[in-house]
Structure formats: C-alpha cells, structure tokens
Length: 171
Image (cartoon, rainbow, N blue to C red; front, side, top):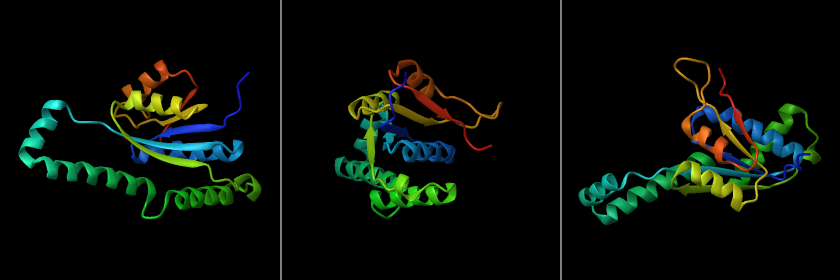
C-alpha cells in the first residue's frame, strides 16, 4: 500500500516543457494538501572552464556573474513577487479552472530551492532531505519522437527510493 503524499519535489529546468509537470504537481498538491518543493539545479562548469573564466574576468566579476545567474533563476521561478504570492495565485487559478472547492485549495505549503551541483544528485538529495513522497519531472520533446526521457530522468528513475513521475510535454 502506498503511503499518502504529503510532500512533492518538482524539479524544473525552467523550460516550457516543464509546464505540464508543474500543473500536474499543483493538482496533486491540492488533492492531497501536500507541500511542494520547487527545485532548480544550476549545473556547475567544468573546473578547467571555471578556472579560465575566473582568470579572465577576475574573482569579483566572476562572483558577480554567478550571483547574477542565481538571481535570474529566482526571478524566473518567482517572477518579481514573493514565492508565497506566486504559488498561492497559481493554486487559486488552478482551483478556479478545475472547479475545486476553496477549502481544498486553502493551504500554503511550498518552498523554492535553488541549488548547484550534479543535477541528479541534487534532486535525490533534496527529495531525501525534505522527506518527499514523490518526485515529479517534466519530459522533453524529441527530434525523432513526440517525447523523450533524458539522462537526468533515467538516472533519477534508477536511483530514487521513492516514486518518480515523468509528465510528458504538451505536443
């Protein structure tokens, strides 16, 4: 028997392909009143490339560039409003469109996590740290078929100790 879903990790690369996965995550969160952890992982540059860029730009300019990238990711996830407002508005919109009772939608369980490192390891680490019951990932469009599962998704599926759902992109 599956345990109830109390927390969901939604990992996103901020691409358009992730929108259906985000909608799916919201619908599950509303149904189970589960906590949503939105995760974006910034993959680091190889050491030799990072070292060369630091040498070319200088330490301070390099740090400014990295901080700027993290700020841009936060803005992409949040817009220019606080996280609680963005998620609450998205949930309210979803509930209204789906005809779901306001009481079922009246919860505010969300957290936005921006991390850097190996994508697969960070997804699994944050799922474990936050005691998540489910990981939701978005599929991608493929050149040769309608949808595709990339190496990140395959690795997470292989190594995860909790259920993983892959939501195909809109066609």
